[in-house]
Picture (cartoon, rainbow, N blue to C red):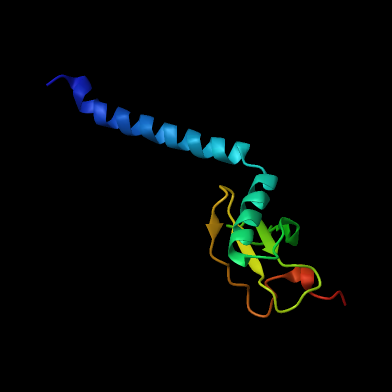
Length: 115
């Protein structure tokens, strides 16, 4: 058996790894915040049903949460008892589970009153 045939599986795995890393890098480089907000606003419209509008959604960065890139919150302004959605999004645009806040802290510090 030729020696190059022994190295062919390693070369194939290295090539596959390079292609996957390039693909993930491409996703991160081309994904914009507005694309993410529009995607999750459309998901909110599906989940909330009639009366929901894309303008109900706002997003903010989540620098304190390691795995969260953007938090998209959707709720009509000034209304109570309506459907509210909070989407935690990672850097690849995928939805992730809500992270648990540290003990004694609010999951939404921007909504806490200033003292």
